[in-house]
Structures are given as structure tokens and as C-alpha cells.
Length: 297
Image (tube, rainbow, N blue to C red; front, side, top):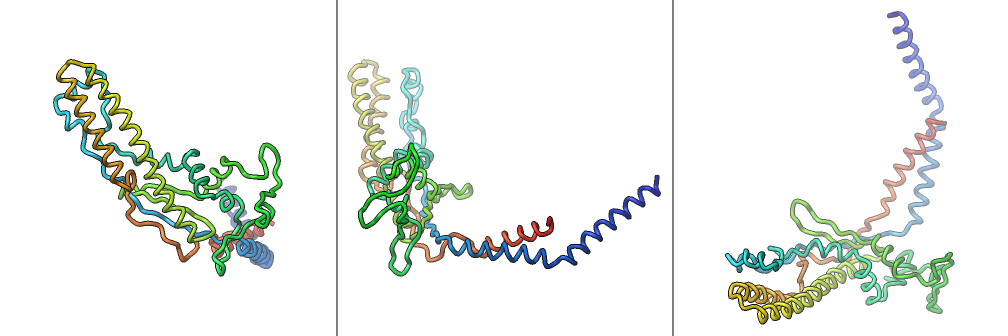
């Protein structure tokens, strides 16, 4: 039995040595595959346009004073009466992150800024002329017409749903777990446009959140006024009065604060260096994979 084990180990060593010797002997095959794949990767990478990423650093805006603290012992009375109290911190950050990715928000942003052509037809950026390059097979700049060839249900002119998906692929919103700061990034062909869109998105986000809260506060104030006039219970009237006072404060903050939901710590600026493609890294990885294919061959 021991003799058979020794023989198997010897055969394995001979096989590995034979394989290694074969690879050394056929080094030109490995080199040929690696070189061919590497050159092909470089040619492909060079043909790809540069992308530039602009980032806005922001943090959730400070919330108003806690309603629960202002109510004191009347909070239990409000609960018994069936009145739902606002969240303690009125933290809108989570809602803001989801809102900025939503179809309604981004489609409005595209329409308001006339971004359908840049998002759906641009395929590069002319650095010397500081101008976006438009794909002629998609959009004819001379006649200002969409000429792309697509199958149903799509039309020559892209829909807002298509544009929403395209812009969403350029957008990234993430939170740093350690600092709780948020980063909103836009990656696009033009560094200037990347910065413009990133800053404009944050500005629209704050304006939209402010508009939503103003509307909700106005509706709440009208409702609380009716509750105050309809009840004779002194404690409940006090509760409704405190709640209405907080809603009035919320309206005042919405009127005064431009950075309502997110406070900008560092606005986006036009980046000098591209974010992708990383051409050297692509060439190295593809050349390595070519070498592995050469080993198989």
C-alpha cells in the first residue's frame, strides 16, 4: 500500500514537472496570446471616451426642535386622542436619497434642463472646443431630429423612462458610515457638465423637499385649526396648539432655508482627471487572461 502511495506521488511530481517544462518550452504561445489580447485591449480602451466624475459632499440639514419635548406631559394626551406626532428629528435624509433616484424627480430634472439630447445621444467630449460630441446615428444636429433606428415599443425620440434609466446609470448617491456625510456624484463625458448637473440636482432636491414640507405643513395647520375649534377639552386644545405652532415653525424654516434637506459642505467642481476608462489596468487584466488561455491551449 505504501509503495502504491509513493508511486502515485512520484507520478504527480512527474506530471507537474512535465507540464511546467511544456509551458517553458512553449513560452512563445503564452507570450503570443498575452500580447495579442493586450494589444486588442489597448486598441479597444483607446477607442472608448473618457468619463469625468464630479462629486458634491453634503450632510443632512439640522432639524427643528422636538415636538415631543415641547408637549411634555401632554404627549400621552395626544396619543390617547389618536393624534400621530411627527418624528423626533424630522430627518429627511433617507427620503431625500430615494427621491433623487425616483422617476418623477429625474424626469422633471431632464425636462426642466432640456437634457434629453446630452443624455441619450452624446458619445464623447471635444476638449479643445469644450463641446459634447453627438452620435449622428441617434440625433441629427442640423435638422434637430431624432434619427435612431429602434424596434417597438421604442420610438425614434427616446422616452423619459429611457432617459431616467440612462441618467440613473450616471448618478451615484452614497453615505459614509463613519462620518454620516453623503456624496452625490455624476459621471459624464464633460467635466463641466458633470459638475453642473451634480450641483443642480442637489439644488432641485432641496427645493422639492421644501415644497413638499410647505404643502404638508399648510394642510396640517388647516386641519389642526379645525380640531381646535371642534373640541372643548382644554388639554387637547393645548396639544393641537403646540402642534400647530411647530407646523408654523416648519413653514418659516422652509421659507428661509435654501439648503433645506441637505446642506452642501463641498460643491462639485469640474474634475481635471478622468475617472474611467483605466486603460492600463484593462490592458494588464486582459493580457493576463490571454496568458491563461494560452496555458489551456
